Image 1 (cartoon, rainbow, N blue to C red):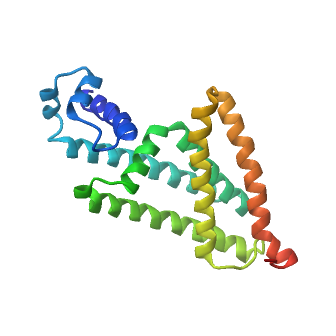
Image 2: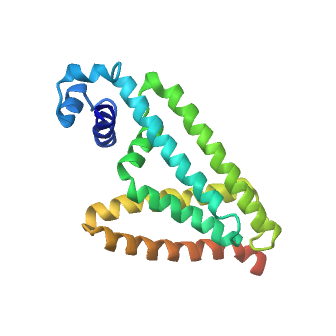
Amino acid sequence: MTAQKIKQVSLNLFAEKGFEGTSLSGIAKGVGIKKPSIYAHFINKDDIYLAVFEEVFSKYVYAITEAYEEIQSRPVEEKIYHLLHTTCKYSSQHQASIVMFKRAILFPPPHLKEIIQKKALEFEKKQEKMLSQLFTEAIEKGMIAKQPIEQLISSYFCILDGNVFHLFFYKEHQKLDNEAHEAHNQERMMNIWKIYWQGLCVEKEAGLRL
């Protein structure tokens, strides 16, 4: 129980302050224990950081993988939208985890960089494989224009990253309760999706115009 509490407090601190800004003393204070008590569960701060990152990483990968497996019987447009929506919803509901995950990828502790980047690349390849299969299906069924799969995947990640950033920013500055925040996100995402999907289809229907 104490080890899990240490990881939970550490997660919030790593998300807010990063690796360098988080101290063992701060973690101990948040848990309500003495600093030496931490060593009964973890070797040092690196050990805590990697344990937290691994847990955050595993839960995130599981959520995305489960969403992908659930959509196999749906029409392809619904598949891609559901995957996007599920990822954004998970990010909204687990903000500390996603912030810590993004911080770790963008600004990893130098001595842990190789370990973190290896994990991140594994997940990126897994996501790209999922999206490649979905966009290939959409092209083969004539739903979207034929174009490089890599570009389609890049466009998806741009939509995803922009929406996740907005989720965090809007809730923080508009002070919405969870229900109002969710309603706003749902409406905004649907509007963005309609324009995005129409953009993928427009070349097939009317020819690309630059």
